[in-house]
Image 1: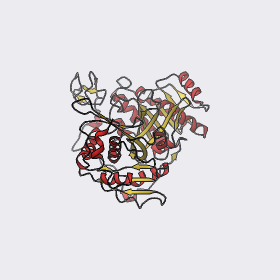
Image 2: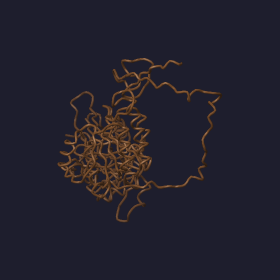
Image 3: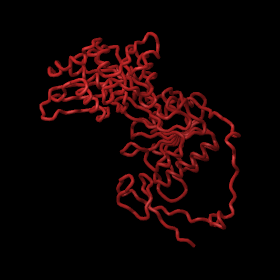
Image 4: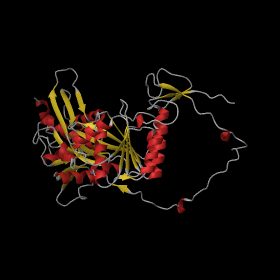
Length: 467
């Protein structure tokens, strides 16, 4: 009889080793290895001949496979439905990650209440809280519907409840508390992997839309084996941006990944923000040099954000460059273009660039907004209040096209910014009432903004007058 060899598995990332290691070479976690003994192979797994006499299964030609649209169930929250691609899918499994206390349980309890009020049955598996704690949260959120609760965290029992009662939605909070028959404590790599696989099979067989809440690591990724994200159909993350919560999809087998939903945390729960652009621009100062409205694309969602810049004489031998919310290397490139192509003297100035609102965006379409904001801050001239810009800036000072230009322009005009400073080729595509200025270079953009051909060159004389 072959000897069963014990393997050691990292509980953070699933890396396997023949012996215990102090530090995981894959995820760098300390003391994360635990021993796992695989089950001994049965007689059916021994090879007799080439493949043990086992014959292959039935083959199906693609042309003979029928087309079927998976039925969707609206959650009652338009922002959540947007992220999921139209609503919850019957039999689909969604993994929701996020930091502790960010609002995952609050959001899912609101969804459960809305679905229960519309006549759907909901099963809520409470693995981390008592039923009394859930009742207290329900009272605070104004939840009045009868949601079926259970504290049973055995994966086999949860699957049996799904098969017996066939709820429209099953919420498991969280998957790290679910146990399955076998060795290992709850939350381990083997336990999380097998529990996710079992609940996914149960969801497919019962047609129950299932949401699994997952813990996250300090790096912001879902804790446990990466195979868990491959098993589920949809993976979404809840992030904090100031007073807002962003729900972002990173994987979606039933829709487009990269969608973004915006919520605001209030006492009555998470409230959907219908117009994120207006929300992020609500506190923007008008008529202040260094403030530019930029049309950006976060995932697949267009939004208007404020790019701020400040220039001040430096007391240090080396001027400082402070960037918040943007890619610092791209900002350095834009500053170099301003100095080289427009003769803008930045050598004795500290430059501060900030993306207002707390968001972190690496969109190259913000380059032109950064260039205009820095120029405006240096020369002390504010941009007109109805201008929105986007475009990538090249090393030659040219303005390049970016992805989603039509969606950016449509969002800007919908928010009330009819005058657009954009790359060439877009000025004739949108509504008749909108005015688009197609610019080929940063110098052209400055001329269009201030309606003068000598706007860029005037910086040579005024850049040294910064207070």
